[in-house]
Image (tube, rainbow, N blue to C red; front, side, top):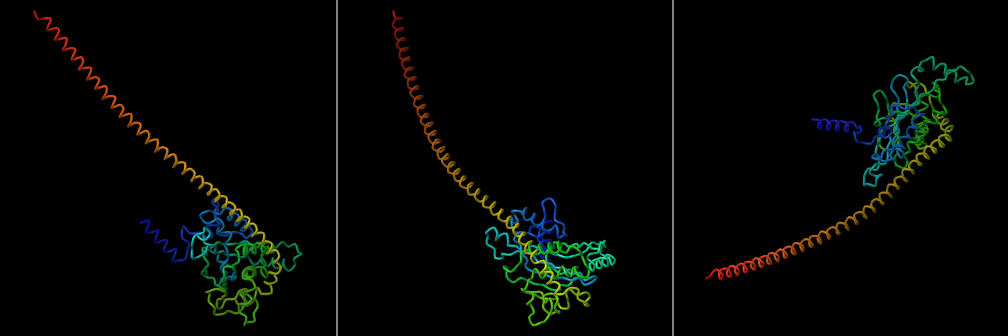
Length: 389
């Protein structure tokens, strides 16, 4: 009964596109042996946790699966109600562990899961009065009003890329070639730079719309500006007029009727100009952050390669020693067999000699008995003669 329930559970998870219990997932790769990764992680802590997870990568998953993971798809979402919150979700893929171990596999890439990145604000600061004070503070940056609202930028680890209920997929981009897929380090570095350089949540300029737009632009890059060359628009990949394109195949597509950066389909909160200005402002910091990040990851990979080579060398030495031990064991077995044969032959010889000696002793004993019997007969004859008158 338990086996039937497990099979049914596995079938349902496959049908829903969820990870199996023994599959490698982004969440499992990021989890620590001692402290499991929370579902939601602040941007400022995620990079440290990511590097630590890479450092402690498990052999059964492939030590460098996480560090070599890349982004295959980028999706831009908008909530349908309330403040129409906007955020970015990426699909994360990595080389298959079979391919990494040198085994034959026709599917070199494996979907690990999805990673959501968004700008929010703490619940106790998310009210009209706080936002009004933050706006006034932004208008007069030299004032000491202290009304700035710290942004709560965060990553959310998801099982897969999908559209939640009550949310709309505004735009999706799929990288056609594996070589074009940006490393996951780019998203992590971009979020870290944005959070460090613009730590405050400002309703009119640095809110979730702006944060998601900049991240999308950083990940998709210049190709996004040429997606619809026949249409004169601003911020063409997410802020152009809706099309009938679906979300399928490589390249870009936008959901009909959805507009990123626009509140209640009434006025634009974010424009291409503002996004491009931010990208230009963070470009040097982003390149330095990503370079440092990738350098750290490459150092880990180099360490793993050296460790793997050391293990292979030890394995080769162990194999050579095993061959020597087997040869020695074979020689000892041969010598033991020879000694056994010699011992057997010696025992057989001793047995024959003992048998011959016993036969000789018996023969001598019989001769002795016969001689005694003859003497006894002679004595009886002499005695008989003496008794005659």
